[in-house]
Length: 144
Image (tube, rainbow, N blue to C red; front, side):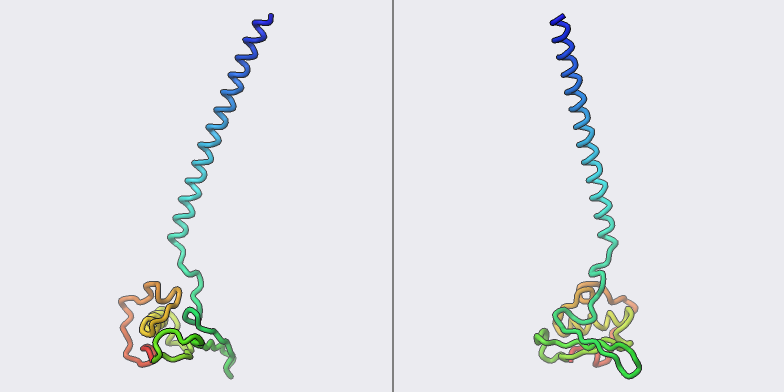
């Protein structure tokens, strides 16, 4: 009877250990598969996203001051408090005008900022100028 008990115990322990080993292997495989799936989903979503998600009203490190004109329209004045960029560039700019809005406006902002040696996240580090947009000879889009 003692021999049967020892054999039963060895068989039970071996089966139990095999079960634990099998469960552990399955859990590790599922974890790795889930991590690969989540990583690929996050990677594909980050390629589709625009950066920055919201472009600032003013170039980097410029102060933004909002006011309302007599018509009730919001006007944003951008002030270069740190004297960044070329000295010949204006220290105060108003990008609320129609010429600075839309895809052509973004292109004008990019050309103006690059001409003044300024950085502007979402403007100077992105391809905002289409081939359809013709460079303007207007003096307000160049560095002053």
